[in-house]
Length: 518
Figure (cartoon, rainbow, N blue to C red):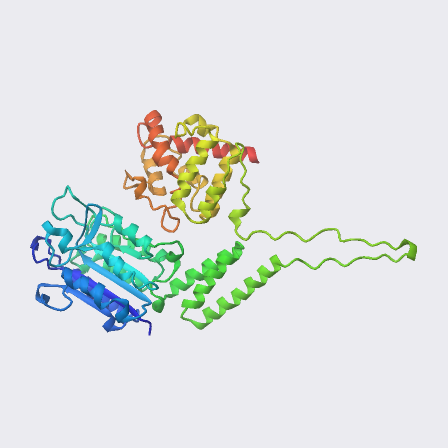
């Protein structure tokens, strides 16, 4: 059995802050602990339950600050428990941020001395990361509720995301930044943890699990007749991690079906290296022998295709006509073998530019999945192509007359790198489906909702966007032009709202360029 460990913490009772008492945090920790033991093959002795109820005060694993530090830094240090495959930390209770640092609030916390009696999340991550080869999952079902001076505290999450990503930790949040996590009396449990345990029984790939959690949590709130906003989030440190199972010992049929579909799609697109990565994952985790055999056969088939692409064909035989000896003539082959082509299709896109702009940096950023950096580079090259770098923004004339070759190059790079999820042409299609709005109307707010720039008619900050094709709505990027530059400027000049001017002109230019191309 794999050497997997988990710490599950639930805090109902706050000794010095009875007004912060919770009802179902302990039940949340118990339920996840049971799932890990019964369904995910964790040994019972390896699931450490720290249950914060008043009746448990004095127990060895009661979730006081000192006990949690002892468990993390001493009991579970590598020299004590050996090489660990998976290490999970689950916390259900209150969480806050102060002076830019995130804290989990244990049972014995004093709000007026937070730094001394709370558990910094970065220290939790550091202690877990001592297990250098372990796959680490941090789950926070924290209310993100402010304690003490509201002027000093902010919701938990921002620092945790940054530190976890840097340290290679997968984080699962019960709600998005600035929201609250709710308990439901009808369930006797928190909505998030209830959905999480349900979800892990169906999906163990973060890419599939996150949308399930969002949908299921909202369903639970509607069933309880609660009109609240709670949007769970999963953050992985890389795109690849979003497609890797959180719990390989309980991979589901849905997981394997998804992996098979991705492998087939990649093979059809002749992205053979990518297809083989999917197939290797199927071979590692598929619980059914026939699925593993099919994946091995697919690997052999792809290897033959690759060999056929890269091995030069045999040269044509020399043809010697039957003539008199003095007339003997050698006929050379008519053509030489073709040069092998790159297997990465984004490399095949010609980087054409009417203004002699170098698009290699944009291509490489997109190819590496560095979406936010690519978004900023997109604005930079568009300013160069429009000769408006000194102004720092694009006006209507520059959008109406943007060079066609450059616009097509930028759009094709985005569309190809994101598998059709991002790009100006994707935004254009959605904008047209919303009625091509030109003012701050319900249709334009619908467009904003569709591409993920607003939520419930409230426009988001750029930092709130997901900026990842695995999690973002279609058309969310590119938007450095739209959100930070174009919208702000063009709204002031034309729309008196958060508006469609820039997308109207860009969509029109895309259509004109397409006509010119044909």
